[in-house]
Length: 240
Image 1: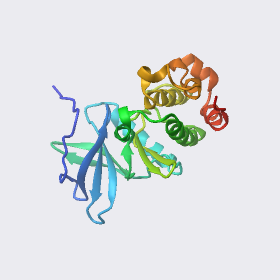
Image 2: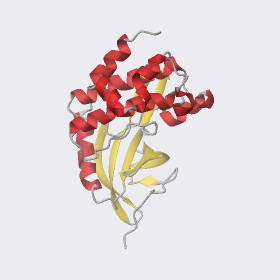
Image 3: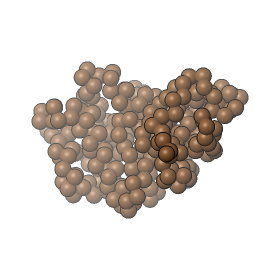
């Protein structure tokens, strides 16, 4: 019986082929794990996504992910893809995607800098605007993200601005239009969570409630049928 992996268990100093050295685990999910690595020949920092071999669909996802990263290489929110290969880990070859490493913090860790892990309203809206603008670039190319959450968005703050990168994509097999609508719902959910979630929602200003809409999917998609509508709202709404 084949055992399905849940982690590769790689630690700092472990080798990833003769070319790379593991620095730390960045994150993971159902498809695999992402590691921060060092290119031994140059000392440059990269990111490696390793796919769990036990998932039968991961071979196709691996190819699709590589092609999507290449297609979206001009989008500011997408990490720059370098190459794909198979690497030997333990007793098997696994699929690996190498890309640039973005020197920031994962959003779920970045939130720990705030009291109660809750961002002030204006900062949260600013971050959501930057995220929305970045995802709009992806949608404009006929693509989607498919798995937006605080565990796969990197954040670096420069002055009053946020620089964001996504480190993962997902394809649930739904029609592209449905996937893009799901991205919009995920952004609304992120704003809801960034500002304190259910515990604090009742006391949020109208600027937050006008986007989150109680997390009612039907209301959110009626008001923001495309990511363009959400971005336009963020640029023009009036504070009350």
